[in-house]
Structure formats: structure tokens, C-alpha cells
Image (cartoon, rainbow, N blue to C red):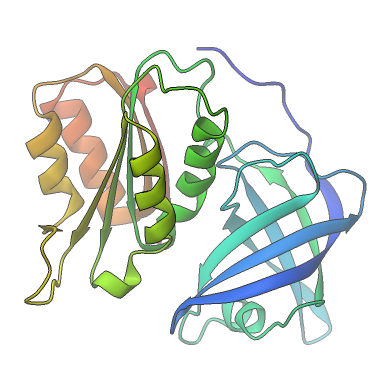
Length: 245
């Protein structure tokens, strides 16, 4: 499998340039590294942000939700977790706030060159690293040489994070397919319903000609990995994943 050159993690200070509420509990953050040199990363990697707590730094990992843009800017997308000190601290920040961070970390990246069809499977804020991966793949402006699918599972229509962006990409790229599915659809929902596992089976059962990238809650990731390996017969090298509790 082709590998990319390793980018050693370093210490940075980053300033919050912009913050946007996506839902009542989810925010989109646009950061810029301002100390520590040029911040380089691969789409899909994560950073560790530090916040102060009782005079000591407390760190949490967050997936980068953007592709490299040739500068030191990057996006994050995170939920306000009830009782979660760090997530609430970050979600209360306003533009121009500064944090310490370390990164990049992680190997959840798309193997280059792309030699197979790609299937991305996400739930909730598991969409963050996948948004970056897709932006990287679609940035060249050239027609896609492979089919690229995004199966994105959430509960309600208003929680389809970055929906307009994904719909615009699907309209602009003939071989990019966006399939949002709702587990708690309203009566007027005309799209797919149920869980991503069901749509994975419906669309790809019997196929092993693709590479899968999965991100979301542990239970979903484990079940999708089982389906891909045991039911579809994919080799473990065709499956990349990241999961959270």
C-alpha cells in the first residue's frame, strides 16, 4: 500500500478565526496556527487541543474537518457533550480565542493514489475527518476516476452536518454519491431512512471492489467492519476506521 511521508507532530498555538453553530449542540470551528511554524497535515488526521483546568492543561483529540489548503488553517467540528468539561469550554469560545495544540496525529487517511472505488461511512460528528478526505479528493477539479460514496447516518434532517456542501459536491461530480439516512425521520422526509448498515448492504452486498473508510460511534464502526469482512469478504487492508465512545 502506498504510504505518505510521515509528518512529525509538533506544538502549536492556534487562534480561532471563526465559529458557526451547525445545530444547537454542534459547532464548526475555523482555526489558524500562529506559533510553531507551518502547520501541515493530511486530511483525516487529528489534533490534540489543550484547555486550562484547575491550573493544569487538559487535552482532547479532535479530527480535522478540512483538507490542507496550503496555509496553516484547519477546521474542527465538535459536539457540546453534557458534563464534558473540554467540549463545553471549546464550544463557549469566541473568535480570536487562542489555544495550545499538538499535531498532526493519526493514520486515518486516504491511501494515494486512489486505485479502487471509495465508500465513506459516517454517523454524527464522525463526518469531520471524512469531510476533509472528500474535500481533498474533489479539490483537483478533474473528473473522478473512481466512484466515491458517502453514507451518512443521523437522527433528524437538521443534524445532517454540511448537507448543502455535500449536495453541491454530488451535483458537481458525476461519480460522487451522497446518501444521507435518518433513523428518526419526520413524516415529510423523502430520503433514505434507517441505519447506514442497512444501506451498505443494499448498495454493496456481494461486492469487494472498494476501499472503506468508517468513522463514528464504536458500535456502528464495529458492526460495519464485521459486515465488510465477514459478509462482503473485504481484506482488512481495504478497511480503515476511527471510532469514539
